[in-house]
Length: 253
Image (cartoon, rainbow, N blue to C red):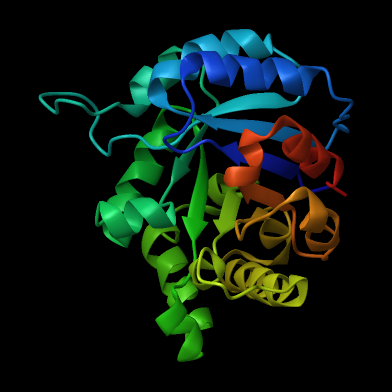
């Protein structure tokens, strides 16, 4: 059974005190994780250890860094290495988020290096992919996302890809006034799974968790997560509100 994951991406939001208050508020709201379900918190670097401690080792609850360097170590002021993250017990790293690709010009080639260094340090990547509005309007989204996956991930072995986590971001439907339907989410998730099936076989493809990253909220989570190839969500703004994120966790199938 594939893992179902509700992943919170706090981005560059909240003070430490606000983050701790959010975790405390979440702990008071009933939300149950089944054996095949996880809640993952993508936390700003300064808060990784205190928020990890605040979560107190709860079952099926994990911490993610929002990025890491593609370098092992060295004179790279301001960067954070995968080895550093592994040394403080971080489980996941979000890689290739659309904001990193757009604002920091992260290429597919660079992301392949980040994937490698995470796996070398026993960190699980949450690998983001997705197309902008111009690509969707040109109806070339399938080819675009396929290239992202192939250039960053297809050098990996089947064993490395097994159980991988992908997050699909329909960038064209985030903050544009346009809305992605649950059917559109399913269509792309099914395509992504088929791309992995072609390269690695159906068994490996069916082990991969594919999360939806298109403005998931409490109001739409259950419908989106109910699609057969949608295995949860990578959640931005709604993850900053305890009641919203608890409802999203409860929306996992």
